[in-house]
Image (cartoon, rainbow, N blue to C red; front, side, top):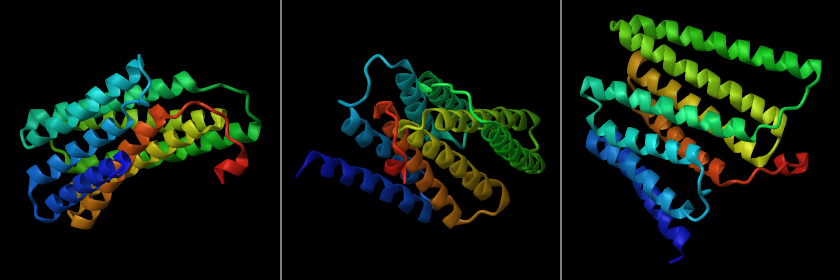
Length: 232
């Protein structure tokens, strides 16, 4: 069996275990699947991962640690630590994207487009945060969520700047992983704070799996300009 097929089977098995855990309400199985989804990907991309990239090492450390601590999520202080670790993941993704961004002066139309997109996203995010306030009785936890979503906003702004300036395959991966993390967080909050539903939790979990896969693709892909034909 070829190595890539072996790792693919491990990844599919981890996803299946996690979804089965959600269906059967077995928390330990769900979290085990999430953790063992990451390990085969790391083994597969090990030789392609850039050496000496501290943003990559920090991202992987926070990612793996967050998934390990998720086993203890019912304990209140571990849930706080978990949110902080995900904030760390986003910070080092932003650092890596900024490192590869080649700033170019855009047209007035593109500048207006950028401001409009950021303003709309910030407005929608503020509505979401205000809705969370009604569900959270703990003021400190609410403040923590504000910091978390500010990091998400920075991640989204960075992705848009990176994509509009760099127009590379690497920037496409970064844009896609950013969108995936945003949707995964929205689905998670929908399931936790609005209406608990298995389908919402499963879709959010699958999108987060895709975001992690795209994150590794982002790190292993060299920066190279795309022609429009290759992007479509």
